[in-house]
Image (cartoon, rainbow, N blue to C red):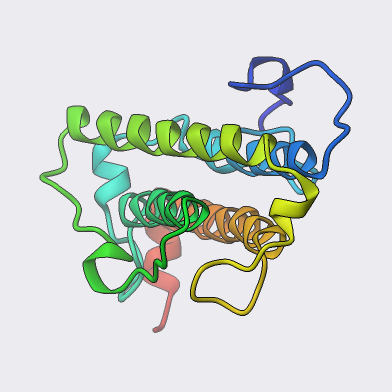
Length: 180
């Protein structure tokens, strides 16, 4: 497990979190970059992943690490779109965008784009008032408070899948012992 990187988190402020929006933004940051209570966050898991590993499918009928990263970024973007007042429900290729040719440059671009979208989401959430957090998400029956906590949970869920994919991909014995 990686050491805490709280001091190097983008947009991490050294102030006391006083608003609910700032506290949710902190949880989004921890799920994505690190210093999460549970263990390694998304970017900590991706530190040593290259394009070949990201595109690999070590387990049958399971999304690759790359597909999961694009999916996470797509839902961060959906959160931003909903916050701007638009209905948004990702389906098909918008939910799991296609992976480009697996080059190192394309992988670095995917990671960079995911970080940019996430950082925009965190900045937006940090500035939300309690009243705005309690507003209903366009086209949904739940509020932004619920949605943003769900986005953090979603990122951690897929980070767990990525951890398993890394282990499965690094062990030929593990792959050959799986009976799916």
